[in-house]
Length: 156
Image (cartoon, rainbow, N blue to C red; front, top):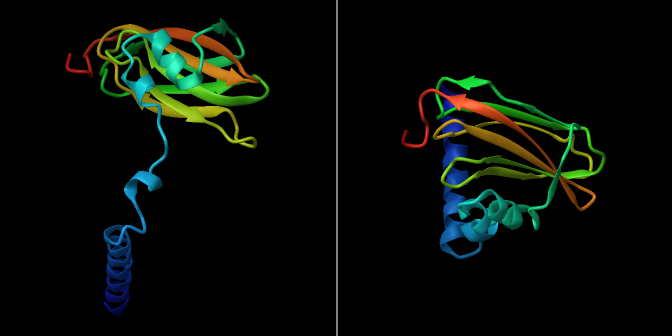
């Protein structure tokens, strides 16, 4: 019982300190949050989204990108996607769903020692190509796979 009280007190003290720092202007949420490419995530076309996220829309097809996605997604609200890049010097991986209202679902910037692998879930409104784009040594490479959706996840 005494241990639970200590945990509660420590948590309350930490939350109060963060709240006080925000209130005093020492810790602004804007500076804490990661920068994001607003124009890329709001783009309505694949090329515009790629340009905003990776600086170019000129991607070369590559068999060194492994895109794992279901052939049929029973629920478009949660479609599991896994991407692995075998291209040396991979620095970024982005996922796009061609037929979504806003195609860019996620974009990942990888550190120098990070394994070029991501696993996530995306929303799909209808049957569409899922596109994985990898940036390595300043060049873009891509691969795609069609995923059939039986129940839409984006209002479908």
